[in-house]
Every structure is written in structure tokens, then in C-alpha cells.
Length: 432
Image (cartoon, one colour):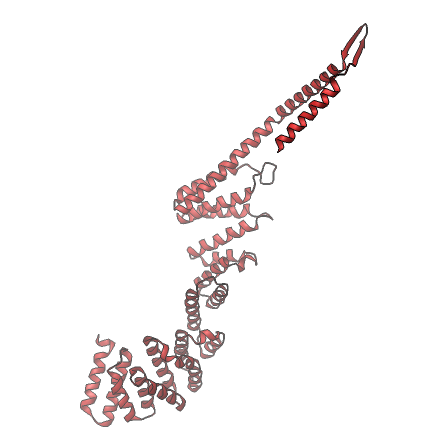
């Protein structure tokens, strides 16, 4: 369509010139004493146009000649830019391929191409600072992998100095995050905390920064900070549901292990959410830890009340638990009820559940222990005899034989007592 308009325009100009100059008989006379020159008007117009064209071409040629040095300089800068981009891509490719020596060499080529170019000058390359910082970081990453810490630190310092401007916040944050990761891998807690503290408040709330903060907290065994950070990451879905659950469970147990008295452990328990308070692993660990730290506490009844309150949600889901968890629950309950006299509430709970599962040897064992504590010797003897053959847990089996031996001694059955003591010794871990 554009060609059609050009053709129409040329035809129009040709028609106008034909009308103007075809029948034009005018002349132009030039007097230059003692001469007189007569020229047609058409020739004068053609000469003027030709003179203008020649003058324009001459001025353009002079301008092009004067611009040749600048064009040559721009061409050299463009070539350096192309070489720098190619070297940067080579460095990244080698880094991803695990060729760290070649990656560092390619990154140094990028820095050599950018050397001497003023980032604020008229000849600065587009995103020159970002290219320079990325080259330093690639060289530092390769040096870190090669265990060349001196070269790594040198490139890191150069990257941070290059990214000190007002418009380079993103690349500076990236350099700081890489520095934190390198310090964690070297197990340099102080350096990792220092680099992490230099992050802006906005960057410190990002998922990557929170992951690094979690690793720093775990490296320094700062369990409360690690737990808070892990909960924040789980809220932002930084981990899968299974991984989040496992991580939070481990950190909660670590916090509980750091508690040195019952009141501190109870405060920790109150800070847990409802889902954690129903987690069998956490509940059993918490009650076991409560009995451990409160062993010297004179108020054993209070400890028993706290432990009973904590373990009750797990007891209510006994039927859905694995056998190993059921055995742990029974052992924890046994230790909890041994802390003080077993009350009638727990006795009725155990009897109801044992009646619902009459063939369960683990429940029979627990009911027998409670009956033994209540001095119900006949019922305890029957339950121990029923459970001892079906128990798979070594600790329960040994304790059941011990209780059978004690009951036999009370009845004066020396033969039965010796036989029970022999079975207890045979199933003892020391015998194996």
C-alpha cells in the first residue's frame, strides 16, 4: 500500500513539473559587466536544485567524517558488550554443568570486558552493574565449591561494593543471601548471622531468607527462633504438608528437651496449637519429658494432673494408633500413674477400653499394672497371665514376668516365683 502511495506521489510531481516547465518561456538575464548572460528559467531552477543537492551531500560527508571516531568507539563498546554477554552465559552454563574452574574463568572474562567502563558515563552498558555483580557472584560461587575461600571472599566484597548504589538493591540482596548460605555451609554461625542482619526488612521476610534464618537458628541451637521461623514458613506453604509436620514436630521436641523444669515445659505446652496437642508423638514425648524434669518435684500429684490432661486426647484415639505407638502410650501412662496413686477415673477409663478390646495384650498389661497398684492381686494376676504371652514389647514382657514373680512370692508359691524370675531374666535385654 505504501508503494502505491509513493507511485501516486511521483506521478503528481511529474505532472506538476510538466505543467510548470513544459510551456515556460521565461528567461533569466545575469549582468556581469561587460558581460551579459541569458539563461532559461528552467535551467536556473535545475542549477539551483543541483547546487543544493551537492551542498547537502558535501555537508553530510563532512558530518560522517567527523562522526567516524565516535562510531568506531561505539562499535568497540558494542563488541565488548557482546563478548561480556557471551562470557556471562558461558559462566552460567559451566556453573550449572558443574565445571567450576571454567565457570570462574568465564566470569573473569566478563569482568575483563567490563573493566574500564564507567557505569555512570555516557558509554555505560545497559545493566552494567547487574552484569558485574553477577559475574562476581558466579566467580565466588565457583570458588566456594572449589574450597578457595580467599578468592570467594574477594569476589563477594567486590560484588557488594559494586552493588552499593541506590538502584542496585536487588543484586545486593542476592549477594547477601548467597553470603549467608556460604557461611552456613562452612558452619560459621557468626558470619551467617552478620550477613543475615544486613538484609533489609522486606528481604528478610522472603521465603528464601526465612529458610536461611531457620538454618542459622538450628545451627546455633536457637530452638525458639527456629520454631517460630518454621511455623511462618509452613504458613506460607514453603514445605510440603508432610515435611512441615515432621520439621515442626522435631523443633517442638527440641524446645521441650531444652526445658529444665515442669513450669517451663507447661508454658511451652500452652504455646502449641490444637493440632500439636493431639499429635501422639508430641504428646508422649511431652509427658515423658514432664516426668523426667519433674522427678525431683515434691508436688507429684500436680505433675500427674498435667500429664493426664495432656495424654487424654491420645488415649481417646487409641484404637486408630499403630501398635508401636500404643505400646509407647501404655508405657508413658504406666510411668504417669506410678507418679502418684492411680485414681478411679483412669482405672474406669482403662477398664472400659480393655473391655472393648478384651484380646488386646497391651491393654491387659496396663489394666494389670493399675490393678497391682490398687492391690487387686487376683485380678492383676489373671490379667498379667493373659497378657504376658501376647506381648511383643520387651520392656512390657519383662515387667509382666517380674510382677508375676512378686505375686507368686506373696502367695508363697516358690516354684512359680522362680519360674517367673527365670522368664524375666531370659527376656531381659541384658540376657541378649
